[in-house]
Image (cartoon, rainbow, N blue to C red; front, side):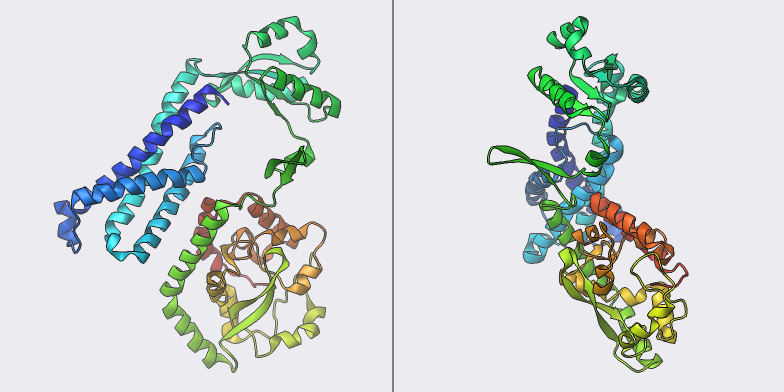
Length: 463
């Protein structure tokens, strides 16, 4: 851990507290300003002293949420990755605050101040990071606080790293030496003296084909000399990015996690799903009523259908949809399999499926038939965003490796749906969903949700 990174993380804690508190105070004075109060009359008043006390408590709570969200992990930070983290962290605080107000309504009731505080907190926190990172980068450009690096490995593999660090000091590293063989550590007297004098902080090993014995020797050497070791991963190591190290019976155990969606992150996603689904159910109620009426007028049969789908860890559940086919269409599927136009996987597709009703074609083309899945989300069977839900018969035909798709709850929308829809080959769809599983974040969920309306109205038959 570079000293500069340590200082940056320590500085951010009181600075974030100040920015959240400042955002709340700014929202208060903005709400009670003459310009805003003339446009939006004040229906609820709270004394500044009471408001300040409440804001102070919320700011402390925000720092706790930020800490659990990974704001202050002792690792190098990049400004480009801070904005999505800030948005997700502040949004998590907002969700908890809304829930608290729901259970204790007398706590606070100014929606304007809450929303304004949310926006200003995101802006202030990001501006604070621009300021802190700008000062840090200024020190880096002057050569201060840089971690001193020894790069070991074949010239063609190590040279790009050397050139990157030499050309971009804002990354926080300075290459002091470059060697082609790991044995230089033990044979080069000048290098030994530099290490003994604490002139090197990090070693980067770029030979991904290094033997097991040499790798173990290098690790031991770095541990004995208090050097941080980083290395270029081989193919297996690169595919297992979600790992956790524990001990069992005195032995080091590496746990390869299915997804970063674990612990508090799973709680965040469930809260995000539940609140979002409730909101959508209320907003879309008029559309539900209109669609229900049109379905009944178009053809005989129920308004909704419940279909068997496979969820997280292989558990089956009933998925709700608006009926887009004739009554008892599932009983006719076995007769239609010979017309399946897809031979790239277990999914079924037929361009002119005679079972689809006239209005059903519109529902399927616009994906409006999937709106009732909101109730699956409320029940905890699905998520707003996740892998596409598949039928049990389709899951039974999965090739090796595709059952990774069952690591998360299926979603109403997902990466596959907004990245090509039914035109994707099954293997491509599976890769997109697996990428989502391995790289989940609240920010990624928000991006997919924002892209979904456009994808819904793209023309093309659905599977």
